[in-house]
Length: 338
Image (cartoon, rainbow, N blue to C red; front, side):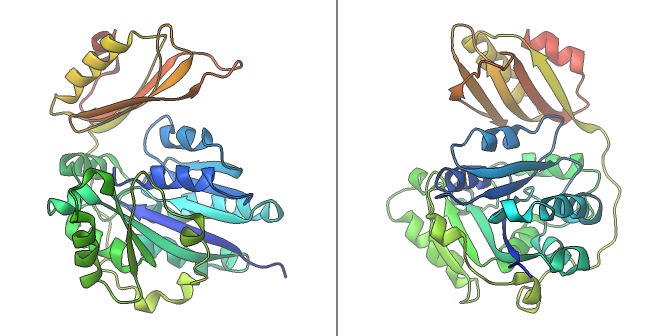
C-alpha cells in the first residue's frame, strides 16, 4: 500500500493570519504538490482566490462554504477528502485551513473513519495566535466580528461556547503554536508573549513567533504526529455537545460591479464599516486606470486594501465584494457603494 498522505490542519481565530501563513507556505513549497482545503464563509471564496494567486506549486484549492468545518464534517469534509484521495498519486501534502471558530478535535477524529484512515493521516495541527490581540489580553482584535461570524453560521453547533474555551481547545490540540504579527509589537514583547503561551501549554507543544506568515516550510510540515491516534493527549471542552438555534438575520451578500474609483470606493467602504450591523467586507476590486487587481479586506472598522497581481488576459475586470452583516439589503448596499 502506498504511504498515507500527510495532512496539516491550520486553525486560529478570524484575522489571526492563517491565510497569510498558507500563502507563504505555498510560495515556498519547494516542489511539493500541496492541496489546500479552505473553510470559507460567503458566496465568493475570497480566501481561496487569494491562495490561488500564490506562486507556489499546488495540487488545487478546495473550498468548503457551507459552514464551520468541524460541524459539517460528514457532509462537507468527507466527500472532499474522498475526491482528493482519488488523486493521491498527484498530491504530496494536504493543508486544511479551518474557519476561525472551528474546533480542531472533531476534524481530527474524522481521520479515524474507514473512508479516510487507510489513505491519510494528520501530520500535525498548527494554531495561529493573533499577537496584537494576545498582547491586549484578547483572543481577537475584533471580538464583535467573531460573534457575528458565530451567528452567521447556521451549521455551528457550539455557538454558545465562550471564546476563551474555544481558544484553549485550539491551543490544546496543537503541535505547534505560532504567535503572529510580531512585526507590529513593541521590542521585547514577542518574547514575553511566547513565554506566556508556553507557560500555559504542555511541554510537547512548541511556540514560535512570526511576522507576515514567514515560517520555514520544514517547520510547518513533517511532524509525523499521527494526531488521530493521539487524541487522548489533546483535551477538549466540547465533545458530544448538542445543537443550538442560530440567528438567521445575519447573512453574506455578494455584490458585483464594474471598475471603481479608488478613493471613492475606499470612502464608501469605510463608511459602511462604521455601521454597527456591518461586520465584514472582503473581495476584489477593479480600479480605474490600474492593471492590477485590488484586494479588499474589512473587519470591524478596519479596512485594508492592496494590489496582489495583474489582471489576466482571460479575466473580466470587475469588482466582487462580499458584505457580511445583520439585516443587510443588497440594493441598498449597491446604491451606497455606487
